[in-house]
Length: 384
Ligand SMILES: Nc1ncnc2c1ncn2[C@@H]1O[C@H](COP(=O)(O)OP(=O)(O)OP(=O)(O)O)[C@@H](O)[C@H]1O
Image 1: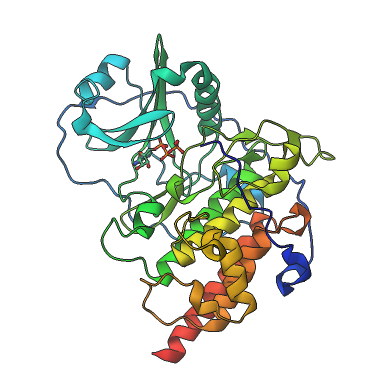
Image 2 (image 1 turned 120 degrees about the horizontal axis):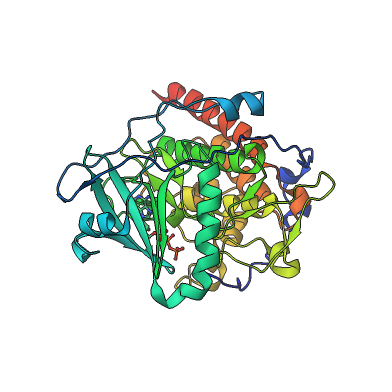
């Protein structure tokens, strides 16, 4: 989880790459999202385990609204009702946290799948006892933040239990695995480029919301492919808010000082050096994620030759040599227009710029991705 990234102080792209000459803009606008007390009301237990997955249908593509307040006040039909379950009910639902209900495991917790009486599935994250001291803060943090946010590209909190030696978070169940599993080919069919672009746009929407539209800006701090969950229709949702922090609230303040948290390979080098956290730290991680989405390579690939080990450095070398197609996942057989790949890579390098002032804000990233998608669609029409 927590790690320092060897060799991440890669070449200073800003002198080499035309991507860095775009206009710079910093964001201090913070919209007010009404604090949702999110009283936990209904929900009963269905202890049967079997059943089809409850993947949510395809959502229409969200557009970042012109008015943050209009956005934050809008109700969303896809929002699930909160769930209020006791520890006993959760225990019954998972047959005392039996391994046959386990769907995953992270550093801090084990995740189980549960089914409610109405047929809805939920994910149940149970904190590991050995991390209890650290976990109290992480748990409170995740619950407090998730309670306030509501966006279709962010995993929704449904309820929690904080009782005795148990810390449990219940959230919406996202049925189609993590983005990393798909990139590793563990989930069947390879993601095509169009799906990869939509996933990138979904994640960018979720982060834009966190950075701009929540009550206070929220910095996720652990944006990575294994924290992106996919629905059956390949829409992406950002998960795992255990490390998230609220950002500065004073208009003249753009950073806060905090211990370094995150995952090796995705960490903002400026944050690593200075402990100064800003929304641009998430933008850096998102840039690394963009490269991962295109190449299917992890940010650091220890088993590769030295010049290919740091994915961003390898991608940038290829970009500089005009070999943009080399960066594409070999499993992605489709031919992709070089202009589209160049713009995509340029955006990734811009996001992962060593200096945060060179990085765009997420709202600009979304707009760039829309343009890339448009150009890609046009290029496909020319081919067909
Ligand atoms: N809401 C969910 N819906 C479906 N599956 C989930 C959900 N949340 C987590 N999972 C599954 O459980 C696994 C573990 O999740 P968790 O958030 O605990 O850890 P992680 O993010 O993979 O690792 P770490 O917390 O160590 O970074 C995920 O990789 C995913 O497969």
